[in-house]
Image 1 (cartoon, rainbow, N blue to C red):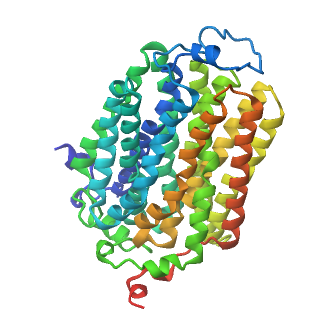
Image 2 (cartoon, one colour; image 1 turned 60 degrees about the vertical axis):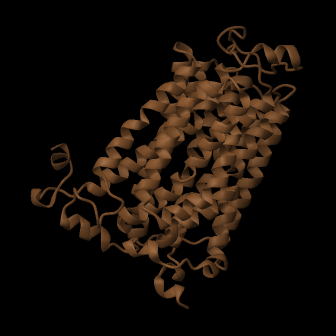
Image 3 (cartoon, rainbow, N blue to C red; image 1 turned 90 degrees about the vertical axis):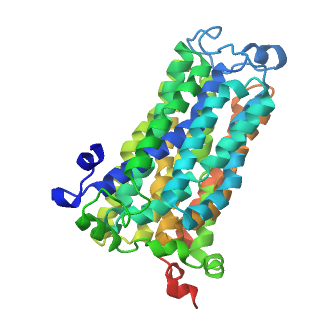
Length: 473
């Protein structure tokens, strides 16, 4: 049987790797969810009539490059959508994502986490397959996108809970970085393949292909993996005991524990995390959802070049984040810094250097190469959020990681909802650097404030209310 040979059982006596395989499956789940989240940001370039800008707007391209503006740069799609409607197609996903975040975080902590993640991935695949049909009626497309976001909301809370069950403390930053590298890899694969598929097969094929492949992951995850190491079939007893005896391990009793609401909402590190999650995500979501549009309208890249350049920083992220996580683990193990300092280092990297990049981009005009390099660098730096505040919930309280992620990432998704809509509204009469500059400044102010708050009030230590005894006080 495949499972008996692929997964290591007690009698084999071989190296224990089940927790690593489980982490890889979580990485792939993140790839799927993030890939299906961003593919429409590229596909929409080929879905909308290019001539609408010429007929109804005063847009004049400020930067002139050696490109064929009448051909490959502006694709003439079938749908006559305004810039505001295009922004809403992208951003309404995040409205559903925002609304679903807290309930999904609660369900992730209270129910079988594996099943919640399976439903999340499966539903995303099916709804993605429906996009080409729904797109012919804009309201129906809005509904499909909203429910895709709603059912995607479980992803980060569920992954956070499973990290508490499967990842041991000594390997935490490194494996969290690898798991969350899936968000970058998914973005790379999605944007790059969306551009290639759009150019060769048409925009509908983007959703048909991307919606079908995740179903394979669903089958494998359902058959071969359990919710926790305590009930996992294909695992050595030695590895099982190593995981469950690890410091901060989330045990089976966690789902039955009373939630210490008062202690949570009177915790200073918790509120620092709420603020950082809210404003420290601005640059990441802005670049994630709007970079292909900026590359097309301001820097005037054609769809193939746009896709290749837009996805390249996420590939670098997938390499840089595990290295950063390994470095942070190494420094903590050597007592060079605490877990709190490690998280603050990551938050600094994700907040301050990207803002410097954006400021330079705003004022170098049509320096196409320099702008492109700085945009790539800013995304790579922003990616440190995944070894910074986006895994801090598991630091503070692994027993309530899903609930904390649901609470903190609800306002953390606001930027993903408002920024595409804001860009669409501002660019209704044409894409200009002055209008884009306003959006850049909003992101910069948000990011810097997030860094200041987290450095002063944030923590990477397990809080007393994480333990059952704290609930009874």
